[in-house]
Image (cartoon, rainbow, N blue to C red; front, side, top):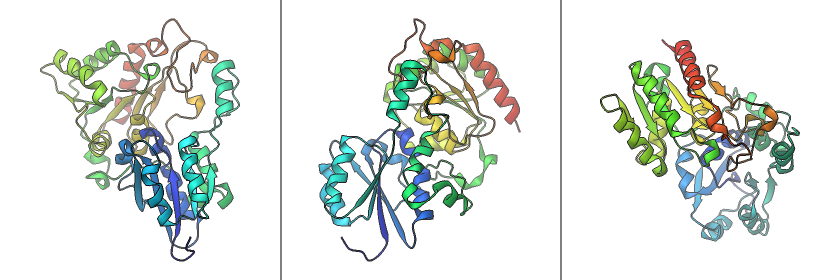
Length: 345
């Protein structure tokens, strides 16, 4: 591997959109911590490249569809000095082994898997409020203190997404529309459809305009809401908007309502006021909004905290009444009204 030219670093995180956004401070920290010219590359799955293309500090985004074999030879040709593994699974292990043979040094995130299992199964909190962004940044400890290095550049370590059109125009360009993120990776994170009916009805009764965002899985749900509230300004972008267009909708919104999803992390990055509705997961797992807008409100299910989180991913619930169902629409609507009142121009 050539030792001339810039220091070349490969950051690896394959999924999901939210996790990719959560790694954005690491990209900037590498520039702050390593001497001389630094060239940061990123390897992810092709489905999530839209959360990275054009992100500040990134030289190139590499993608795979199924296996790392698709890019292994090309990555070897680049000649990386370091690989920062923020996924820590078998697939990222294949890349590390291949690049080690070329003289690359690798650093791997501590996912705190055991601590998360203890929290879910027994309610034993050994995470002590540590956020996943801190875990990602702690991967760079051999180079120094990442947050201090960022602070030396006047960077607080907030999340970032690729710039969208009009992104530099400021809060004054906000549309006044309320953005509702309908989707979730698992049912334990999903806000129930009947709750969305109450939320949209409440907003339209106040004359609010509503944008619905989500992927192909949310198209039918969005279509139902648009039909029920025909005559109101309710627009579905589900299954249509690109990542860039979705980020633009969120950035311009007066408020974002979302569950524990990638949209929540995008909202934090874009400093949009949010109402975050939790279900089977919990902020205690370290996946809550990182440095969100100060008006953001988080609403959790009623009941003993020790009974949550039910699972690390939101794919299982231990309660007869599912956790998202235990966040009543009335509580969500009260939070929406409080945030809109506080942030009204």
